[in-house]
Length: 215
Image 1 (cartoon, one colour):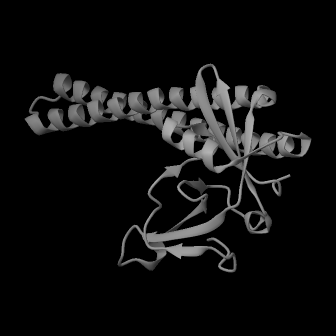
Image 2 (cartoon, helix red, strand yellow; image 1 turned 120 degrees about the vertical axis):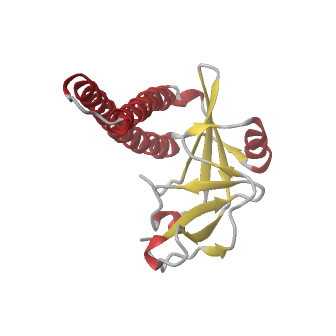
């Protein structure tokens, strides 16, 4: 749960244009960053804050990739087991109903397909993590922009009848663009400015959002 004393303006719906952090940026959002932000020197202080943001995100990406791989392997293993049960039942049981074979086969195919999908997705997560790692090494070529910002809080319930299903999302309002803040803390309330770094990694324009209180 977020600290309720953090001063965020409550909003009733998500901002119109949202940019996630530590991901590729689209042309429209990049144009807003360049036109609304104040170009500033990417000095040692900001470089340390930038590197901290990138490393935190890399750790989360590695953890997420590991979890996805584990679920993928479990799903494929479960599906394979279901198919083996169906085969054994079909060849050994003397009086076998169609459902006793069809159900394990269907479940096996579903689990295997889901597992393959998760493994493919984990590869995308790995590629994304690699982009972040390269961005840290290429930080000298990054462009940095400074913003005055306001904090926004959007709250909703996954299940309106269950108070425990409350979800809170925090955004930094930059005017025409809002950035979702995942690693939110009271450091964002203390920060006077937020910074956006744009960096080209092998033709992919990456966006990193941070404040100088993160050191």
